[in-house]
Image 1 (cartoon, one colour):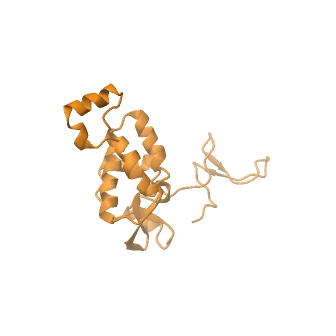
Image 2 (cartoon, helix red, strand yellow; image 1 turned 135 degrees about the vertical axis):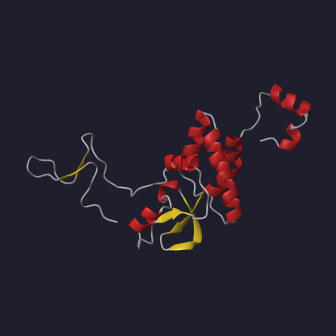
Image 3 (tube, one colour; image 1 turned 45 degrees about the horizontal axis):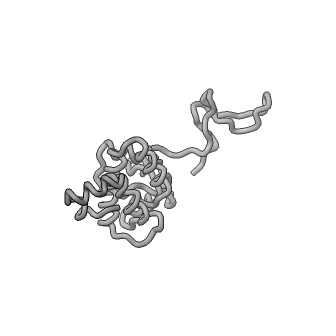
Length: 178
């Protein structure tokens, strides 16, 4: 990446254009500068995480389709979301999107007493578009299940031989536990 102080000069920009280099966009910045911080987890300040989070969301919301797909794949494996446990809003830690739930009163009530469950950190302002992007990355808004419904909407629970099977209806697994 070329520093902004260089590309603000017209002659430098023309030279870079002649080499076939394009202006970096926010997706490039996020992939090359911000993402590595969260792949190789190290101590980051909360302020840095919050600032980076806004940049990440902006990149995911404004990037062209190809870069958006690249960003989504990269951030599914990055510990970049600030989270808290169900019983402790004070201690923040970083998690991957598929390890966290939206922080709603219904979800907190549902998972009350399950210390291993993580929620997005409170006191973070999310717009509606932010929540859609987070859910696309894997943040859950309802309890996750491990068995999926088949094309008919049933969850096969036991042997499917005639007379020796059990199944749940509409994706419901009656033996589901937390």
